[in-house]
Length: 555
Image 1 (tube, rainbow, N blue to C red):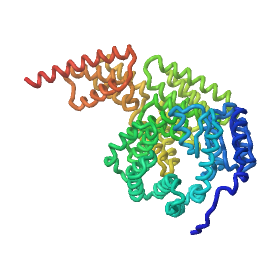
Image 2: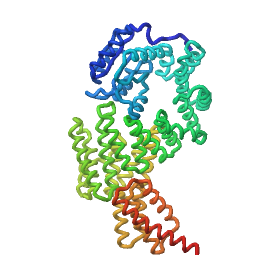
Image 3: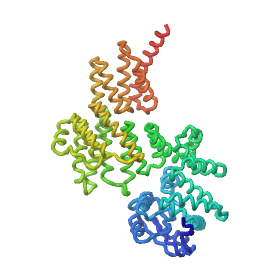
Image 4: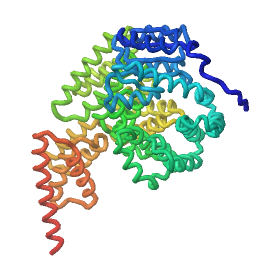
């Protein structure tokens, strides 16, 4: 292995700096400070477009970027794109400017791993001191940063161990140790990483040491060994976000998707701008039948991806689709409100995107589903017969929506054929593929076993109940709850049926678990005043019957 030392720069005068900020006063203040440091080549851009253009022409050593570049895209999206295009690497000095320090913003910035984070208003002497310190670190540890860029993690460890023997670099040891820990985890050396971080805890109390140690043990499946540590980490602002994110990954790997969903929701709330995490939240919401959560996640993705490298018509299509999925679980007037908003989203999609014609079939599928949700199945059928092809497309989400419209129209053979095609499209062993694959398996099973939407099933249950057909009513409402387990309305109906079964002496012990789940849902859910009244009424009847049964058993 070559041991020749490389450096980031020779003299300050060699450095090229880019400032991206729409405030010319900030630009002038920074340029003045940089000139005082003998940095001569300083370029400025007032928006993301010109910042990207300059980066395409020049390789900058230092990029200083404001978070609130408002004219086209903000600093978060800009830096994400700079990294994606290779304009910013580990060997680039990356500095974020911001006027805010709220937790969600800081978490989002930390995810982009800048070298420093400067809060406005800027103080020239402080800026100079911090930049000099950052440059010194980058210059001394350049070999390690370069190895990280090239994903040569064994080299990272080699250079780190050499630097750690150099007493002159003692002030840089925390940075060196952090990169070594990252390399050990990246090489899947989890036992070695555990020993490494455990030893560090005797000397350092940095957040990254605790997180690294927890990650090393979680990767070995030893969550019980760090339960107390995890409780501490989730209560500390500086480690809360990373811990929830780490736990979500752990639960996905162990196929505990309900726990993963709870953790990813917390992580997403703490750092809402990360699109990949929002997508994970969406996938887990679908898998856990949380239609409201699915709708919110797709809306968050579309909102946060606006003007970013992630922006595309598919994101708005997914909002439309999840809105329809939610509407077919709602049994009151709220469904129509969501469907009206869906109509507006469809119009927005057609108006905003020049290539909307490329999505004609997807829009037709959505319109057919909207008609079907409004019980206008004849209109839906005409669209499907004349404007929708049974042939699968290259995109899984397009095919899934076709499956849903076929299923909702009773065309089950077509739906199952398409589901088989989708199974063949799932590939890869990433955690995202794992969640999506599990969702496809679930969809296949449920659409094979259950032939109606949650709303249709609930309507059937109500009709059976009114005609005193209690067993068919129970079967229908249980299927509805399987597809929409967070629906309080469905659980109220379930308890009403169970009360009647109890009164008719037709109750079986196995139904008790269903009743307890309904009661737990009532406790966990924030209810409006009207729903609270309905819940209180049915709970009172149920608990009274159970108390009577207990008294009879005692005698």
